[in-house]
Length: 89
Image (cartoon, rainbow, N blue to C red):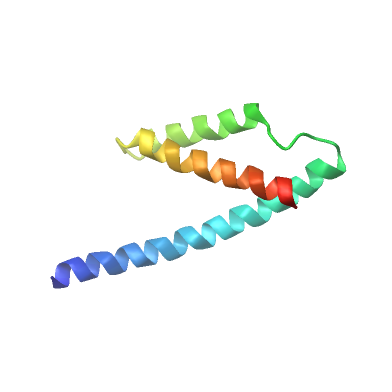
């Protein structure tokens, strides 16, 4: 049981880092949304979203991960939330 607790602690630390990075990402997303609105640029940018997803898939493969579909699902959610943040600010 002690080993499980140690592993769970590592997960907790990783989760904290993920939250910090999401906060940083979403702060930047807000700035982009402000810029888009000032310049009359559409919030949804399908080409950019595809570019982001292609890079994520490539990085996932480079890391030797086999869970590409799961990572894509996570990033689809991040992109969707990012778009929502831009729309409401």
